[in-house]
Image (tube, rainbow, N blue to C red; front, top):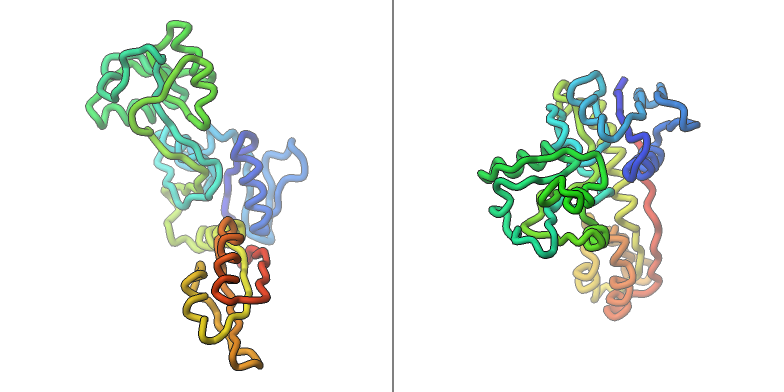
Length: 283
């Protein structure tokens, strides 16, 4: 039975639950359940704190887990990133007071850096030959400079509004681009059959979320031009129609480009365009 750790709360939890449900797995029926057995799919789900998932996967008896890339790198465990999951994107950056002379990565040398991800930041700086005093805080690191605890911070940045409100500005290149990932234990090989099945199901869900199925008719003389407009996720399926001058095309296209592609297809001469949502395949 494959043991899978999932976040019990936080920004990654609901997307992770939805993804597993769409992949055909049984979830908990109430928030007090910590373990869910799914014998039909030969898995066991463990609802754990997001900060702890990489530790359990890297050092415990959990086979795989869903967590953030930033949390994995900060854990210091031997858990391995297996595949990205396409949600929970974030950017990790340095920020200093607006009036501070700290403007380059080299300026951090000898300074105090507050962060909730102290190992990740320390590793990043040391690789670049920069030595700083990393101060661990569990949250609200933006206040650390104003309160005299640190000279600058390293934190997740989305819109930057919180930083600006705290009188901070970002500088230097991003430390890390993070997102939700599936991680595996060092005891589980990459080609483990159980992991392969899980990966295929998840990939089916991701594909269904990102793509739609587009059907349209096109004059035979303009098939090449239409296919150039919609090359698709895979090669289009082209079928003859009763009217020999026309052909039917079926292709998977990115969901966010549907309107743009429809406009271009009508310009080429397509008709009867139908867009259908995909459903994840279950193995």
